[in-house]
Length: 287
Length: 239
Image (cartoon, rainbow over all chains, first blue to last red):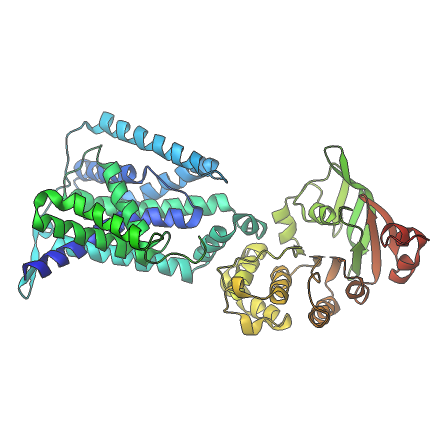
């Protein structure tokens, strides 16, 4: 029974990693941009929520709804005026620029908030649990997982059911032709990054509620996000969720065997998937 | 009244003059064919008309309005539609979605307003049975039809066709000609660049010949094809 419990906890943890990864997957899927500052943007989102919570005395669950439009704006401006300039045939400029951005963000957060680790205030809800038969599930992990599924369902609806989604897919397919049809790729890309940062904000909420954070933890979140995206197959959102789950389960199983093995087990699972399916579990037809 | 007029339009890429003092008018509702050897500047002429490249000198008027400095986007909105020599569909989108993208953005309307029009266009271009197939799976003829449909979806007053019949079998070519005649019969002005001469001459009322960026002949297709200069330059026949 302890194993079933461990696996279920791992699946729920996978929801958090899927939230980390969805924004990365979205941005990569639409504009082939690898955003190395993604993890730091999550941490920035967590600090933004923390500031709103401590200044306005709001619950983190309310503060996140104020942070989301603000982060959308940050993403829009970041893409429109900085990252769009790096896109082209060469993959190096976006890597270098987002790497630089990652360092700048870490240092700015360090300057503003010091290296002390912080945590979003918890309440009864965040420590509550429900009993399902012999297994006890935390309400927070359940909420996290449900949010991840909602985000992915929402993104799929957006992609395949709306005009904006069609413009996303057309631009992703061929930006030059899309611009001849009257689509403005620069704005489409900016909107996509804006949406990615809205998801980042949701991820930041759960990051800050579940564990301590400090300005330096971004790159490690980026690694988990990357692994989830790559396991799933680049650009496939359901694949990203599955990737998150695989890493989450591997980590909890590893921790159950020996607490020191938690992180390592996740990375090993990632390497095994890469060995067996180098293009991920759900690769796109022609990437 | 002429829907399009070019006055002394010139364009050079470095030392190479690709459009050399082009002067011509296209009356409303006419179908004009453009022929010329490879590299004569035919596609460049289209790019100048659509605004994908800017003219160095001269002026272009569309429906009496000077559009020389107007962006490609705005010219598309005002009614200039084109197909490309090499079909460039969005391969992962379905045929119908390809049209929706062109129609919503090319006419600045919402999806609800263009749905029926797009279905009508697919009906006319005989692609309706492929409406939900990803464009990447289409055959060459179907891709050419999609290219035509996508241009039609913007409801152009002036339709520019760039070598749309190239690479098709005779039967496919005839089918495409029927579709183009049908579009023309509805009053759409057409300018058509084509190497497949019999396809061109079965539709167009006037023929323009380009060579090294210069207009060297313009008039009745039969007279043009019979002229000595055209036969020498274009067909390579020693007279």
